[in-house]
Length: 131
Image 1 (tube, helix red, strand yellow):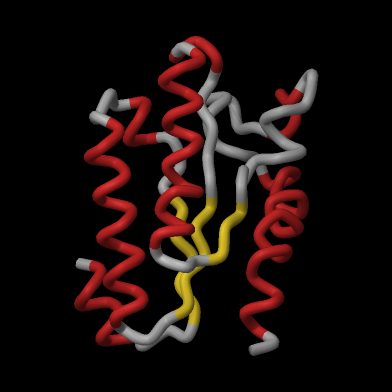
Image 2 (cartoon, helix red, strand yellow):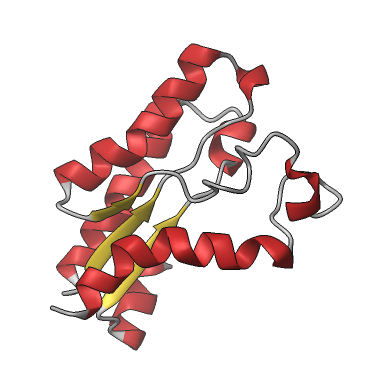
């Protein structure tokens, strides 16, 4: 779908955000990395600048798996010369008691978290808008 959408809309900037769904579904990390890399390559090939937003997993997935998952975003950003938001939910999911910033499912951010997320993305996005 992405190539067709890129052709149709011709964006100047594409923000790629996978969330944690791939990892929560148990997909192999190389598959997730390859999917993200393919999306970044497609966006770049269309002429768009790319922002990749990093994600982290809850600790119950194990430290090694979580660290490898978090690292793949920076790896792809570096390989594709994309801007990086190291952790999209910084200041939201990493708070001691983040419940007020999440929907009842405790996975998706609530509206109250949106200004914090905006600030996180803006740090990577603003410089691209000035070029």
